[in-house]
Image (cartoon, rainbow, N blue to C red; front, side):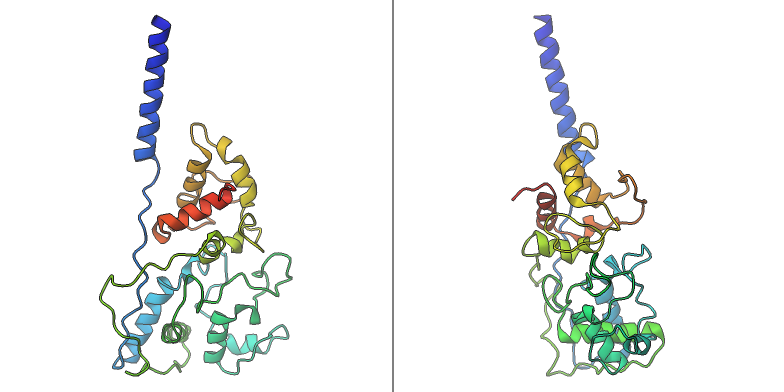
Length: 279
């Protein structure tokens, strides 16, 4: 009888401990706000248009997920100033003739010129891991792309040549929060949206990088990496708190720590399930 009571007490303690961990131990993932069309009017000043470009660059455009001090992609602050130099490079495959045209091309056809060392693995820097920002989960409008170009020209100290939107060209204004959430359609699109394929190889990634560990290996070993943590819990923690456990052979602080703010729950689940080989 005593042994039975001990077993029951142990089971109750384990259940309470697990419940406490799931409630308080796993970071809360709050869906990102809907990426609504930015309010653009035909009477904007150039300063307002550039400020809009900065907002898109840091927000809806998801540019800073890769173009940051972590070295996952080239820094963009000087890109407008060195655009002519890149167009003169023998490896340049695009059609741009001006700085503005080059910046536009680099956003919708990034493979036209790949900075050495930042191409997809195995392509000899001929294929960029960056998606076309006018399509897919990002889907910037033509006016939004122009705003980002204006911002990049401004921070590089070159002449801002983009034209201000006119009343006819500007999208209709939307009430705050009226836009629909633009979710990635599947795990592959979610991986691309958040730049996973720039650093990792693995499930749902056609051509990835090697700056981070292979996600297939992470998924295979996830259930045994941290005592008391399931495979799913470990993968979630690795995404929202990437410095919690550093894979052998890799450095800390290489992966952005704000994916918990960037991803919706649906997109997080897509990625987790892909890593674990679940449908």
